[in-house]
Image 1 (spheres, rainbow, N blue to C red):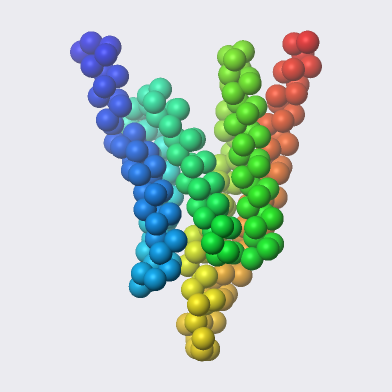
Image 2 (cartoon, rainbow, N blue to C red):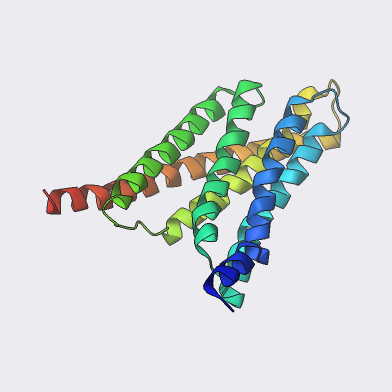
Length: 206
């Protein structure tokens, strides 16, 4: 098998297909979050977000098990993760889907992602890699869980009567806010770790 043919095969490997799927789901989630007039739009958008989040785990797991890593996979996977989280947070804030506290936390998370991406781009010019730490993976997982809970539990805001289901949705939303706070703390901490690594390189190479 020639090298070019092997690269084409890797491009359409299952892990990469899952990454492509995650990116393609994002505009659909966008539409469902904006379309409040569609019945169960919140639940549908939550389901799609969870589905996209699962592909984030699966593509890495399958890639490691089958040893089908590729350059395009290494390039797109972190971008797909950041697109999913950042895009959905922007919609949640813009549509007032979340409250003021969650808006502040969302701003922190988005700002950190932009900052770390800038650091990676800067260090990439010197062929210096910043591998994803285990804590950063926990940060991403916590973010995905938090956003899922926020979307699903948000339905209690649109109801005008009390019921056990309303109480359940409210509790889900509160759990989402708590997870979102934890994710924000992890976001700041991991951002500090990356910044320390980058600044150490800058200092050593003046």
